[in-house]
Length: 255
Length: 240
Image (cartoon, rainbow over all chains, first blue to last red; front, side, top):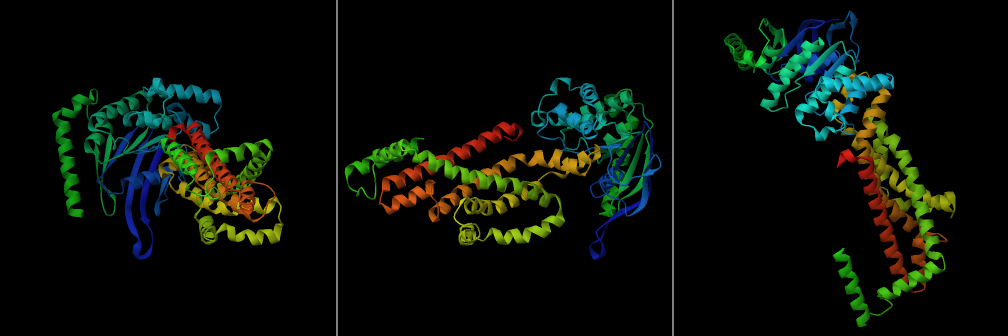
C-alpha cells in the first residue's frame, strides 16, 4: 500500500468569503508505517484527514492510494473520529460488525471477525453492551475495532483520544502502539499533542496555521520497547520540549 | 391519580348538593348510567370504533406519506427547498377550514373525514421528521461512508434508526391533533362516532351523554399517548 498526498491545497468557499485552509501539502505513507500530523487548532490538520478519507475533495493537487486517485470515501481508508461516532442503537459487537455488513460480507465471516476484533481491542466481554454503557476509552476501542474489521489499507485517526481524560489517554496510547505492533496496521494520526505524536509515530509532520502547511518533519528514532519509560527518558523529553516550543512560536507569530 | 380522584369527589359533592341545575352538571352516577345504557345498546362501541377507525386510517396514511418525504427533505437540500415553503404555508391553514371543500369533493362519506385527518397532520409530521434528520451527527454518516457504505445505505442504516425515537414522538404528539380533527369532522357531518354522539346529545339537552363523550374521548387519547410511549420504550431502549 502506498498513500501519496502531493501538492494538495484546499480553499473553502469562493470570492470574498473564500478561506484558504491548506497550502501545498505533501506526504507519503507506506504499508506498516505510523505517521502523525501535529498542529494547533486552525492548522488544517483535520482537513488533511478529511481529504485523505475522501470526505472533502482537494482544490488542487492529488491524493492517491496505490496510484488510484481518491474520488470519495471508501472502505480502504478507515476513519476513527474524536467522538460520537458509535451507533447508539447498536451494541458494541453490532457496531464492530456494521462496516462488514455494509460491505455485504457473509454472516459467518462477519461473526468470526467481530469476535476476533473485539478480542484484539480487549472487549470480548463487552460485546453486548450499548455504547452509552461503555466508558469513553472503551468506546474509542470499539470504534478502532470497527474500522479495522472493515479491513482498510490505512487507518485514519482524527484526534482519537482528544476527548479522553489524561490518565486514560496514556493507557489508550499504549494500547494503540501495541495494536500497531501486533497487527502491522498502517496509520495516519492527527493530534495537537506533541507527546502523543512522538510516542506513537515514526514520522511526525508539524503543521503551521493560516494557511495550513507542513513546516517541519521529524523522524523519531526512539527506543519504544517501554512507552512509559520512554515518556520520561531524557532524549524524548528534550525533543518533546523543543517541538512544543516550536509550535508555540508558530502559533504566536501566525496568530 | 390523586388529582383525578379529588376532581371526581368534588364533582360528586357539587352534583349531590343540588346547587347546580342537573341540566348543566349531571352527577357522576348519571354519566355512568348513560354509559352503561349506551354500552348495552351497542352504541358506545360502534361510535368508538367509527372514530378510532377514522383516526387510524387518516393518521396511518399521514404517517406513511410523511416518513419518506420528511427523510428525503432532511437528506436533500434541493428537495427541502422545493417543498418547505409550500408546506410552511399550508401548515398554517387550519385543517377544519378544508371541511367545506372536502365535502364538495367527496360528499358526506368516510373519505372527507379520513382526508381531513390526513391534511391536518401530514405537514406537521413531515416537517418534524425533516428536522429530526438534521440532527443526525455528521460523524455517524461519515463513519458509514468510510466503512464502505453507499448512498441509500446511509438512509436505511444510519438516518432511519437514528431518528426512530423522534419519529415515534412526532407521531405521538400529532396524534392529538388527529383525535381533535375526527371530533370536529363528526360534529359537522356523520352518522356515528363519538363527536356525532356529543352533537346529538346537545340537541336533546342530554348533558350526561355529553360528559360521557368527553370522558371517553379523553381516555382514548390518554391510551393512545401511553401506547406510543410504550412503543418507544420497547422499540428504542437505547434512547432513554
